Image 1 (cartoon, one colour):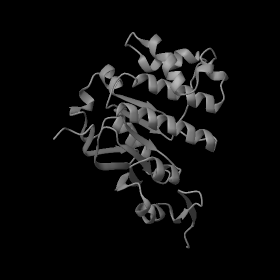
Image 2 (cartoon, one colour):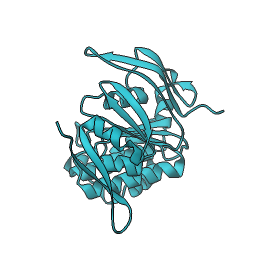
Image 3 (cartoon, one colour):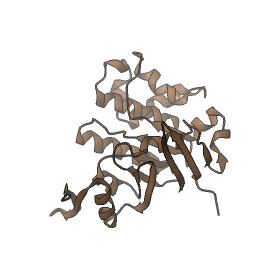
Image 4 (cartoon, rainbow, N blue to C red):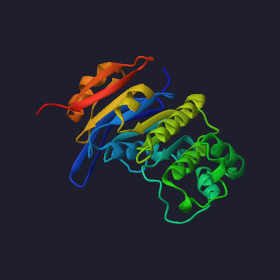
Length: 256
């Protein structure tokens, strides 16, 4: 049996007096997992552990059967990419340079910039300055950066921390669709922290539900998860069938 793409084995981390974990999780190539939970649940910390941005106090993370903390930074960057929560940069860099950072140190930046911008539907931004773009345009450029990073590998890992925050609903759906199609074509696993429950249920295969630094349950993304999501967020949730097909999620605050 082949090793999972990513495995967290008894991983624990303590920061500012809060304990995160233990995490015993595994992820196969091509899977799509949404991470959900209230503010302060530890969702971003979990993604930071999975990316290798912080080392656990206890436990081991393995990427394709190799210890994540023993991979050289260049090799780690070749196999996994991170789409951050914030799109701000400290300097007014050219868009082309921002996208090229996804290929840093590989010497082949030029040939990947155009295709990545095209994938993110951002080719028209190529000659602009990043700090002059709108929030939605910056989101497209950052998406192009991670697409360039994982463009020529298969079975990689893409971690997205609230990638759709502060974007209008139409753009959220468009960028999420682009991200999912890119990962599906290359067999990349996608783990995304989300707040939109319907996006998580309809666009992902698994849900990791978090509270107080722990993953409470790893559940398929289907209607059977509604009671669990309701308990997690203090909501009453109902799936409503639409006349044209499909369904929508109705939510209201649970009674005190």
